[in-house]
Length: 382
Ligand code: GDX
Ligand code: MN
Image 1 (tube, protein in one colour):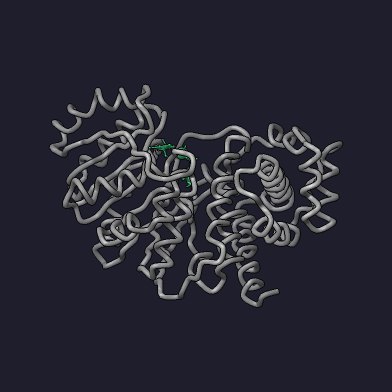
Image 2 (cartoon, helix red, strand yellow; image 1 turned 120 degrees about the vertical axis):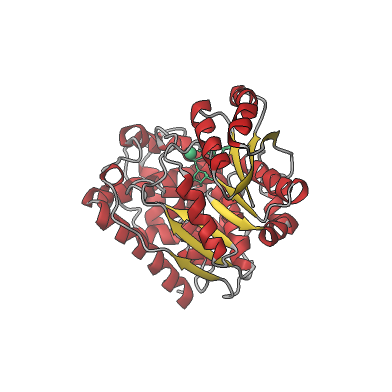
């Protein structure tokens, strides 16, 4: 039997109810758990519908508040780690699944896919999805780039969606994650990075299962909404610098299928709302911190104080900038956060203008080749 966990903050209660019902109705699922961030309106709504849901599906549906476990911002990491502990301490289920509560394309097949990969003996199952060409910009530009630079010889840079929140772990994997102090400390958006890193470092068998209909979920406006996530995901990678990862993990990726037009034609963010971020809120110290970067990057970024410029932040400039960030970035320093954020915005707009504009196929190929090029270069130590 499996436990399905939904971490949630404020979401549409109708969507949450639908997803909890899908899980509770699945034959492989023995218990469902919703982990709330705080006692707000969504939490009250789940409290109100959960007994009826349990009665009609015959599956217990529990609701708890997340514990304070880590030392970073109390966020999704505390929520997921609370779910792991509940799984080990309060249930005798063999497997735990995590799904985001805000998915509007969720269905029983998501659970079935993960269960059947676990039946075939995999320790970890990760769902991956087709993403629009301007989506997943933290995944590509931060996490996959960071994994390629730091651990080029391992499976880490080859994980399709290292930040994905849709996962299955067997019980021994959950035990290892709860015993891993680095993972338990990562209470913020860095949790996905830590789960990915820790399971590959532990040499487990990881299977990525493809969900062809994609993950439809609550959308952001401009790239500002992603700022906290960006900062926390970068800091998580940087904190792992120096860790040694062997090549013991096995990793299989399910074949993909034709991508629906709803994804190939989707625009991931509002370009106009994002462009002006390049020129806003500069401080003298931020300009000074750019002194750490190669001259072209420094000059290009400084020019944004008067007019938006971003084409200089190409693949090569991003490689060099990322190396600088790994060495010099100071976590928690607001000026460094602003520098990181603005560099990433410029990189994303540069990619959008030169690659995403050429279409879905081209941009997907480009991004995969970019990461692979970084990986090969890091492997050669150049
Ligand atoms: N318990 C708890 N506590 N749940 C939270 C918290 C928190 O502090 N913050 C967010 N959540 C829930 C949220 O309600 C949703 O169910 C899930 O966590 C994901 O949050 P959402 O705001 O929908 O994140 P987003 O931007 O959709 O990102 C998700 O997908 C990314 C990706 O796949 O690229 C999220 O799972 C990221 O971790 C992941 O990187
Ligand atoms: Mn979401």
